[in-house]
Length: 101
Image (cartoon, rainbow, N blue to C red; front, side, top):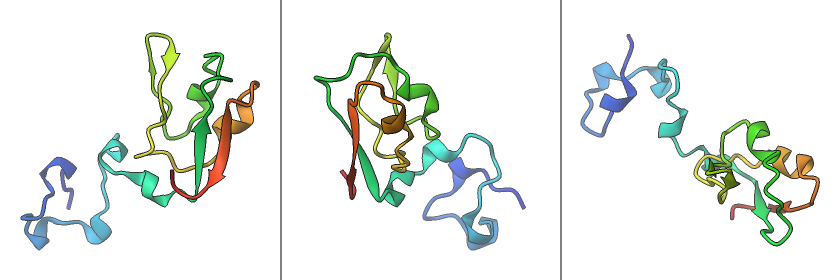
């Protein structure tokens, strides 16, 4: 059985839910706040950031939004705290701290 995630809500009959509430549609991760899993949190030091944007394309969760050629704050709702962004930043503008936010 295939269930459209946009139709799942508190009133969805149990017969229409998939086992484990698995989602089989592509691109549905934006609907889930997976940042709850995070054990480390990236911190942006704006005074050190040179807007090189090296961090944005390496983020596996697309949690570094870019608008008009400038990176914005982290999308903590989806960031899982992997630290890849901090490791690629040549200016040490991103550090990791333990815990959520």
